[in-house]
Length: 399
Image (cartoon, rainbow, N blue to C red; front, side, top):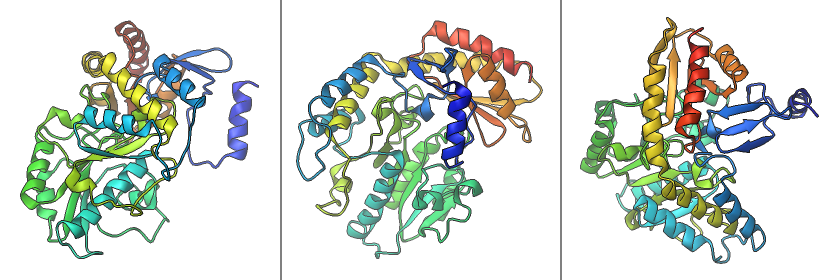
């Protein structure tokens, strides 16, 4: 079948809950993908940062292949010989005492919220059912009912009521608003260090540090959702590393699976994580042996190839180059590391620009109408980036 046939099948049998760029990916390697007709493209989305290590990294593929021949699933009713080493590797890499493995990013968020609410009752003395959590407008924490209850994006939450209570929404980047929103039943503050789905919104310098101080002063938990920003994407292991703002809980996912499978987790120290006791939370697939093997290999690639350094250096080059494009419609280029966005004038529809980029061999995706994100795999070389930049700039210069 050709690309048109595959798209027709998707449209005929699939729910229309996405509006993808009309390209079919049938092969991938590193920072490039190919369609069934053999056309080559640079991947500048990286599956929303799930492919930081590049497509089909041989070290991760080999770990998965070897484990597939041994055991893949045991459930948490039994121990397996891969989960312990994986959790140790994750804790050592992140600098936390304990980890709780799940599968998808939104499960990590749900786990963090449950931990915070339970901690609020058992450690802070808040009456159960009264706990409140402060979150930020413009956030994207996933698609569950709890996650969309935190959202202020109508496309995410409309017609899904009744919504989950207990959330206070304040403007992203405004630490004063967070302090003003505190109440006696507040148990946590949850934000993305950089808002990805909102269009790579980078908060003011010092914002994360101030959130840490606010939470410490109030005796509440600070939670960072690093699902998109984590694992070297922003030029640091985690985006909060740009400031002195160590959170009490980190939500992790996407790149933890190395582009092979969904793996997520939260990490925290004993004082928080010990609120979970047998039967209070769990997952059949969380911490499965295949995930353990893949997760260790995914972290090893990040370490061995120094991908945070590559992301930082090439991200600087990307923003510098795109900043020279002359276009009356471009308002802003922003980002950190290799998580970047071009923001066009407010009512501009960026979808045709994404189609034009596709014709030049660049796959990128718009968000919020007038914004295009550019986030290639972190294994992209300087030479490949220059080739991609030439194509991107040729498109943006004609917008």
